[in-house]
Amino acid sequence: MARIIQAVRGMNDVLPDQEHIWEFFEQTIREWMVAYGYRNIRMPIVEHTDLFVRSIGAVTDIVEKEMYTFLDHLNGDSLTLRPEGTASCVRAVLEHNLLYTGPQRLYYSGPMFRHERPQKGRYRQFHQVGVEALGYAGPDIDVELIIMCAGLWKKLGISNLRLEISTLGNVESRTLHRSRLIGYLEKHLGKLDKDTRRRLYSNPLRVLDSKNPEMQKIISDAPGLLENLDEGSLRHFEKLQHMLLDQEISFEINPRLVRGLDYYNRTVFEWVTDKLGAQGTVCAGGRYDGLVEKIGGKPTPACGFAMGVERLLALMVECGKEIPNPVPDVYVIHQGEATDGFTWKTVGHLRDQGINAILHCGGGGFKVQMRKADSSGARFAVIIGDDEAQAGVISVKPLREKEKQVKVGLEEAVGLLKGI
Ligand code: ATP
Ligand code: MG
Image (cartoon, rainbow, N blue to C red):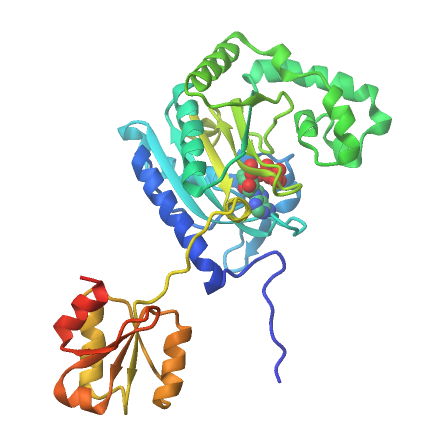
């Protein structure tokens, strides 16, 4: 026998038994986005490598070690499977000049790719829903995005998510903070891990985002960014907090909150759970007022977030959200060849009337077919024997209730099956 080829490590199949949970999630997202006036945008999964290097930043985990980058041998282009959606989204907005008509509220969803060590809640192909509001200076839009998230958690049946917020200030305050941080870290040089030492001068802020447990003490004693905040960012942050309090959204200020990507400024936030072990951040976002300009557009304030779909689905299950697996309405059992005109006509008509019908295929006697009907989960069996076919009627047998089987005409059957 030929060797079975397996899926790429860290890239998962979603099997039919699980698919309805995804379906529920995606449907909920669509309705939720429409309710807030966000429009869907779909970008390619592959982009020019430069787009990510320029927007995410060269000295970041993603660009340094997580990107699936490859040479297109046909033309020599360096391409990358998208590790996140914001850069692609902004690129598309600029390429099609969408900001010409004013600010844009957009969302997208789909697979992202990062070459990380696969573990629970961390995969190499994973899915995100991303929401981007371009052309809004906030903090009202920052609050809208956070309130939207809170509303979504309710719809998904997720409770006990913690909201952590902070601000990264503007470029000047970050430069000041950066030099204080370098000074502090230089004093602890001996205790720094390899990554940190390498990034000490190129990207010291990223040290605060380190996952290394041995670095946590040094990180928690490091000078905070909030002490060096510029006036404008401070006011922005205060207004944001007032609005959140006013809306009864509880939050914690976490001064160590830095995002793993370069392009954030001012507001940053994360929704975190303790229920998923180490992979506890289900949603992360913030402002990125400099990004549009960095990718070649006019200066445009912007704010957005991305959520990890796999982590949210795991959390829904953890919170006991029940999503019933959809069952077909009808399983159609028939004698002889299905090709006999009456059977085809019957299933066709049922489906036209909005009734989901599985037609038995593959032959077999009445008993075998009946067993299949039972295990299909269908509410009714429709039985078409020779007698029925000749008389132009069908037998309807409830499979989940103790009601009697009846022989009726097609129109009457439709009413019965629809429960009218
Ligand atoms: P982490 O700190 O867990 O590595 P991150 O800061 O790299 O996350 P973001 O780039 O902010 O993550 O992505 C937003 C969200 O996407 C994360 O909060 C998480 O829920 C999800 N996510 C990120 N990387 C993965 C992955 N490899 N597998 C599954 N979900 C992921
Ligand atoms: Mg990461």
